[in-house]
Length: 513
Image (cartoon, rainbow, N blue to C red; front, side, top):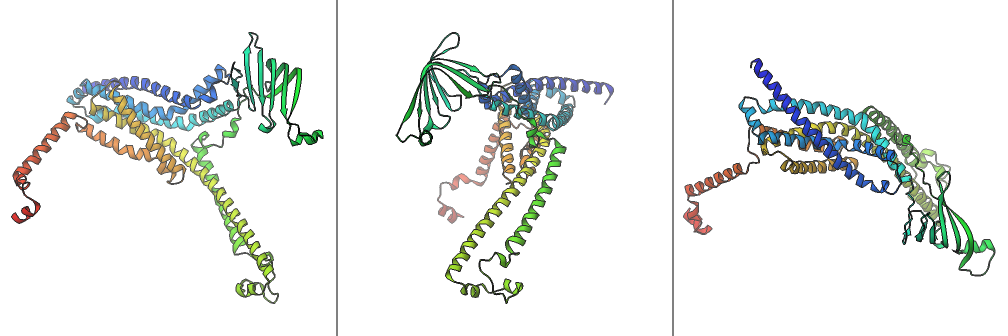
């Protein structure tokens, strides 16, 4: 190969990279947008009607974009590689490269190196950027959930966004005054509900935005009286309710309208907010704690709960002439016969209470050990997830690129459909492995690497078929193979005269044989 060939191949590498980078950028932003809309739909109740500022919304969008990158990146690589090589095959550019003596592996080499670098970047993103963004995102989500909704009382219907209150307003003035109000206050329970009606009302917030102040003009209130109120007033009569008429009344409602930030430090011990070193340190620490807890519980169970029992806990006394060792080996049947019936019942009650206490202690110990195992398992799954993201990028490239050369279709038609189907299969397999690992049915590494183990042979198979120019998805090729198979079957029938035997019954065929 001379220098001219080397320059020619270098230009092809630049051409391939330029086409792929453009398609990857477009598909990546499209995937980010689609997954972001799906994420926003899941948290729409936390955003709508809260009176959130533009800055908080922009912060939420930024953290949400970072959280959907692990799903958008493999999908974008699959779609862009499928479209890129589909366009090359459809325009016969790939055929021209192969005619020039360039193999498919040589064509894939520059893009494979670029995807390898992108996979390394994906690992560093999931290890350094994603934990911080996840911690800030969930802290922001918890803050939004704690914020009370923006107060917009409608006209002609009950408003129930204030906890413990239902407010009905018949009309409003231009200044914001509420006309013909009806307020149901059941903050102390439905049995102690209070109903208030007023001609006019004005709603304002306190200076610290923690309370709502409702000033009512010309109204009445009706309050149910329960037995506690009757005893407090000293009344002996059965009074169903109390009626109050007022010219002016102020109702103070606990309703925090200010936006307060959730403390991010409370989420630092969560597995989603840790990098590799922190995850490994947490796993090692929890394993040490779990082992020490297991040994302590086992020692207590063996020494104090079962084998280490002594006479002091027995409701009856063993004869004093017996030593401690003899008492342990004392015949229980003969001992049981020496006690009275009342003592026997006392022994049974004591034994039952101790058995219940031991059972509760064992269940508590199992819960404590299970919490530690769950903590270790979640951290181990998060550690493997950081590697599976990078590896999924490579796997999807070696699925999309050979598949594009085989189907010979570019654009946004068949490649999009095939990419979505493959990604759905990947998502189902990945979720299945995740749930298996989360429920401790499989080891953490097996559950998190399940999707990669399933799709890797598919990528190897498609790459081999594309390198050997196999018409895997060509309908004409399959039609020709079907015709050849039919001809072979027909020749086989003619050779052994199978059709002549069909006129005879099985008994006649055996007789002729």
